[in-house]
Amino acid sequence: MRAARAEDTLGQPGSGERITMSGDALLERIEAFNRTRGGGVVVRKMTRGYTLLSERTGAPVARFRPTGDTDKVQVLWWNGERWGPSGPFGIMAMPLDRALDYVANEPNFWIHA
Image (cartoon, rainbow, N blue to C red; front, top):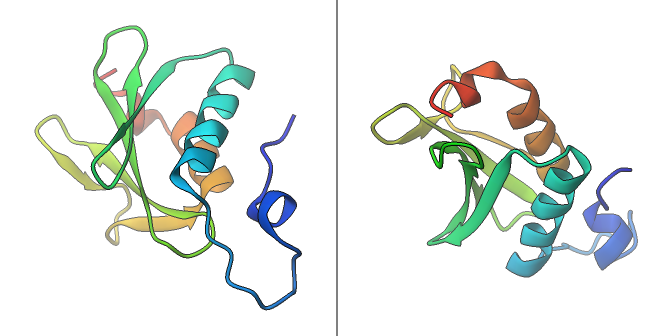
């Protein structure tokens, strides 16, 4: 099962219209992805974004900050002390579906979990 893309739920692709996702739609998509993968994280909507915490330990795993550009989010990881860039060239921004796959499949996010 794939999560719905912004074009599937909020407008027609190619219309030239800027599509933005509501915070609730992002939260629902994150939770749906988590359910289809058998769990693993608890999602908390917090100031300026969404924090993913390990279901097992409660430790921070990742943070998504919406950019306001369609369903793109900035992806941050917990370095043991604070949120920081998730990539070697700074804070990465990507569509939510890609961000979810990135966090789920990148072992570095799970070091503290």
